[in-house]
Amino acid sequence: MKCPFCNYGESKVIDSRPTDEGERIRRRRECLKCGKRFTTYEIIETLPIIVIKKDKSRETFDRNKLMRGLLRACEKRPVTVDALEKMVDDIESTLQNSLDREVPSSLIGTYAMEKLKDADEVAYVRFASVYRQFKDINTFMEELNKIIKSK
Image (cartoon, rainbow, N blue to C red):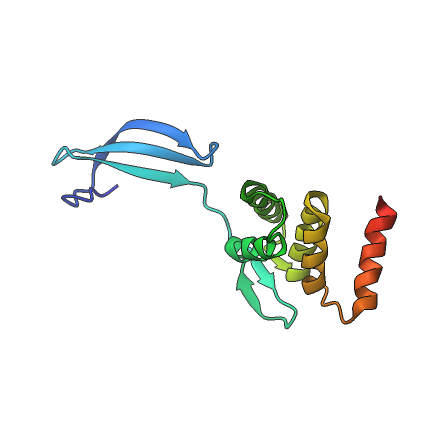
């Protein structure tokens, strides 16, 4: 690891600690030339998830985009940001653990709707109305009736 102060290529590890629930390791290092200390982080390298959009275009998975969609659906609803973060973490973890490196956007939307259905029914219907592109009030009512029947 190069020293950020003198660019010397050798350093020694003074201290290592897990951070972020064991997802990263924080290392305190000391340069063997100038003696200054600096911190590095080691993370597990993950392969990017490619999302196949409805128009067949492809883009890398963006957890912030998913979070924005969930936040919009939960606006003025009693769903905490921590709960939304956990939903996004769970969805991203599910995608990472699958063997597929390319997933359709519809699958991500389905996962998001499942999470929202458990958290808040109004947020679920809001998300579903955009995700499923409800055309009229009848489509909207069909989705509401599904929720009522499931209770």
